Image (tube, rainbow, N blue to C red; front, side):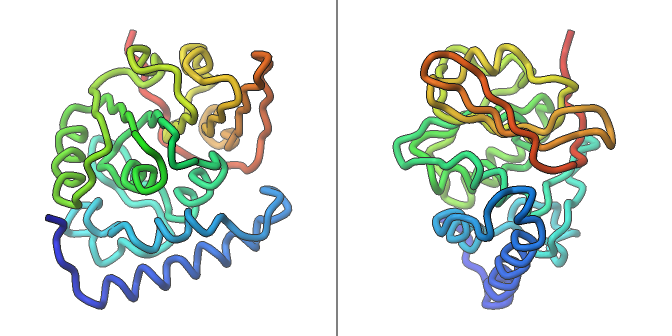
Length: 225
């Protein structure tokens, strides 16, 4: 059963969604929309972010900022989680691949919206912790894999949507190959401070269209050789 929570966290989560809405309006020219989808905002208002951060950082869980989670990784700021989720336009029947599980917060948001989520984490320690936290939160439509996310998860491909939560220097070809015709991928691309949040659309004829939206700063995508 999911853990019970007090009214304080619920109030903080509501305040967080208001910050996300304000942030969205601030960057509306870049993202070409004034507000995010209602189902995305409902998921952000429901999933307990404090259960997906280290216990000593729980009091900061609903601030609109990234937080360290170990292994040199961070949990993305809530606005970025909401925006990336919104850009994918997830439908209830969708199968979604996530690259970079972290402690599982983004996966929990995706699981609220999609039929199935397949998530890959290269750090076994984080993957185990995420699995435990998601189980405690009552989320059961996620499959886990430990490995190099740049290679995707070909056994379960193709995917309707793909989300990448760490930045490669260029879009990994394996992820493009695993994206369904008509599908979308959101991914930060580039080195260091030159990263751009990029929306990739796979047209039904196999043509790939990319749209750079915002400058971002994500952890580099770890690629094993």
